[in-house]
Length: 143
Image (cartoon, rainbow, N blue to C red):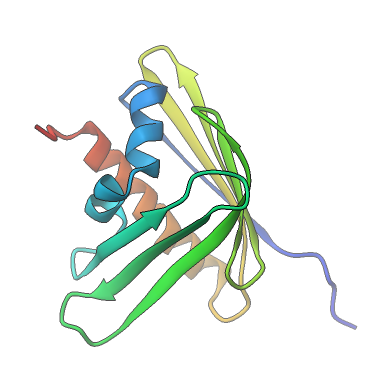
């Protein structure tokens, strides 16, 4: 008999920007399109974000060569500005992103329910690569 408990994957990164900046970069579509990628051969051509409880977010993720793409979307269950976001993905899985201030740095922790199509390791690697891309973008000169 199969267990019904979902596997949770936890990722984290310490980003060398203050929490207000990290929050803004994480939640603003014009910035999401610049960091939301797991590898250089992918990109996010557009993103929309209605950042409120019941609001929807969507990010279009595509291979740069046009061979594959998909919309990653969900509905917000809880939004605490500069602290945390809880959402339900389009496939029903739950996720939480928390932002903790550590002086002039921000610890970002993501916890999400794994899907069953890909291995836990592959999901962890892909989501961590996106989080690392966020860190790199947040710490870059965006002027």
